[in-house]
Length: 292
Image 1 (cartoon, helix red, strand yellow):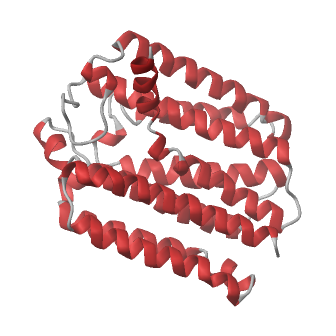
Image 2 (tube, helix red, strand yellow):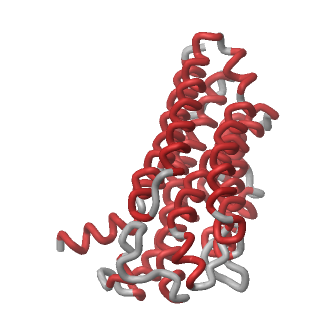
Image 3 (cartoon, helix red, strand yellow):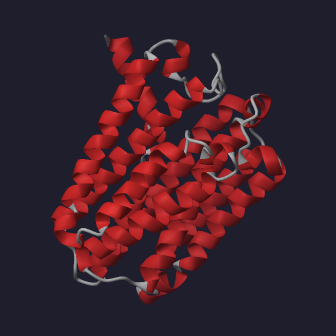
């Protein structure tokens, strides 16, 4: 029983969950700053984001197994279906149950945001599956990073803000792109680690196409551009708060240097640290907005 529970926990991919949390926290920060924070829809947005990401992670494991993209003893985290810890049927069932629960949570948000959110919810649900399956799986055709930018940055950050406030903001839009770039860096580390395995089975990730050197520099640039996009917000809140983006840049550069010298399983820790750096940045941003 304990092994089965551990297998499901591994399938959730806890290292990546900060990606979905960070976007919602950033939106909450802007809503608090504008004195329009509404806790109930904000919490529901957070729950929806986490459930959608978990469903995406489950779907990725199931459909990559079906296509033969994962192998026993891979460098990345253990794949429970491939290793035989979880049956493919169970993973498929839990994928759609989790996605269904996420959709129900998302449906409740129409109370604050309007019925037009149903169309966005359908788009997100399709995106959860299209990342790994369908006629043109996004993660298999150099679009994994773009998918994260859109579905973990632009969409959740802007919608969480809109659902709380009833309006849109150019500053929030810039922040949504910044969060999306930070989230894309998590996928970049994942694909950087798996480049040889992906190339061997014909999985055309961005790293497979452009190579490791270019991928490392994309990681570096993404982090810097993300800070530049929200620099004005930090400046508006006072120079003292600049310590947070400065610390982010220092940590980001340190991770970039470390990643440049690691391969295989050693990169698993860098993936988790990249996600946690994004999470702590969003916590710092929320703190700044709450105290101004």
